[in-house]
Length: 113
Image (cartoon, rainbow, N blue to C red):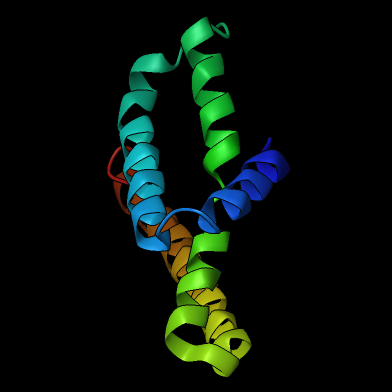
């Protein structure tokens, strides 16, 4: 699903303003994550499958519009800029994971994390 969502997002990026796509993708992702606790159950319900399919399609769909924005603003420097965007994203993910682990150690559970 991830590959299909990314390829479709690339096609859309050629036809729709990249900023609009990013707003749609991140809003949908945020709303789906807010809804996720209500969807969880011991069994894979239909709503859980809807979440899985949506999230799978959306996961890397942000990459084509992000690259397009880098290209629009930075031209020939796009590869370098996108490299920094990607690196900073990974650093943020590492800090978030470490922070969640720290909160778990501090509180004894993942409720705050």
